[in-house]
Image 1 (cartoon, rainbow over the protein chains, first blue to last red):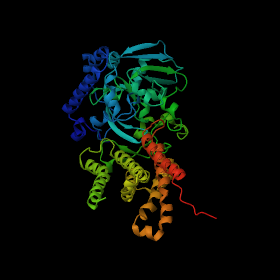
Image 2 (image 1 turned 180 degrees about the vertical axis):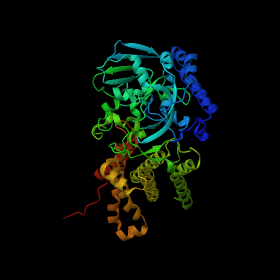
Image 3 (image 1 turned 120 degrees about the horizontal axis):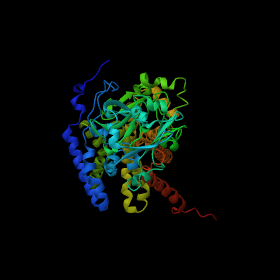
Image 4 (image 1 turned 90 degrees about the vertical axis):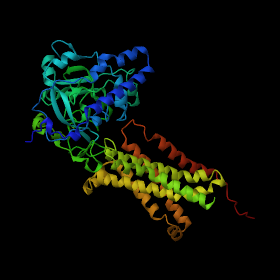
Length: 323
Length: 206
């Protein structure tokens, strides 16, 4: 198997650091201008040094044997400007413009439900819970586009061990941050908020499931789900909940946002599966973001290419029925 | 209208109609010029341009009827209609090349299973005979009455195009609304005209 070292990633795939730092400075400027139109209270919240520093903090990382090799990384520019984050607008370019308002510090994650004792974790404690790893994953959206992203985090299982779930806990539910004063764009769609997603316990415990704090060596930009999200690389992107505030252990399959919206189009499992079409398009192929139009089309792999690690989770299940 | 004015206006129309294509070609030739998802950009841009040009084609007759001074607008109808077909064809070819990957099985599967593709394919197929019979020779050959009747297919094609747009977007997304309203208005204007148009004098019977 080809193992790529960081030095093997083609330099063309990496946006120069100065360039994206510049972008951030521009964004901060834009945020400041926007803030001028808001109350003074909010200005303090948005341009306070803590959140400013947090947005660009370099993270100490270690290598991971679970990283995906042999793929060119999608440029930082596209990963941060082509987003589905409906609380900040339905168009893909909107989250990058609007998510600056997300108050990522202070931030806590509430653990509740079927656990020994409910707990609240501070984001700084979570960052130190386990060494942060660099993990390159393919990211396949249900809309049939895909990216390759360098995430930073550790296996969700490390966090779950700290939560002491009871043996009756069969599923874990993630709730995203929601405040309609901060996210007025949430009303642009008919979705009921907060965003809810969930995994079966064994899926959540699979080492590939990443509790994610950063990407490309730095803390997550807000539009990518700062300050903490999950990334489940063998499932369609919407399963990977962003900006998590609550982790709830439950006995029954939790309700999930897109499944509530349209059951036929978005199943609870939503494993990447080229053999099960979305009602409005085929899932056999995908368009890789950032490539020229004639080179975008790629064959979609079962479980997004992670079958060796996860296929056993679904042994005996009819994946056409449990899509 | 003076001949020179007509030539000038036609030239401007050609430039305006080719502008969306020029933007795509320029984008394709510049690194990252078509953004994060170039295939989607090409498909969405050509589809949207088709509907805009169909709306403009449909606008010619109702606007012309507002005043005898606007009769010259009729001379632009064929040009606009043919450009609508031109963009519809690029749109369809973009699907064939970039989405189906020239795979006949995928295309047939899509048409059979996906109603938005079915509606789009129907719209293109309805426009095809109109483009083929757009020459002066074809009008003479068919005769005005039959030609007129055939070209009423543009109404169905426009409706199919709008339905195709709605079925393509996610539930709850309202992007197709403005174009839908305009095309609906232009079709209703025809109904209104048919109901209230100046009655032709009937021969007086004894």
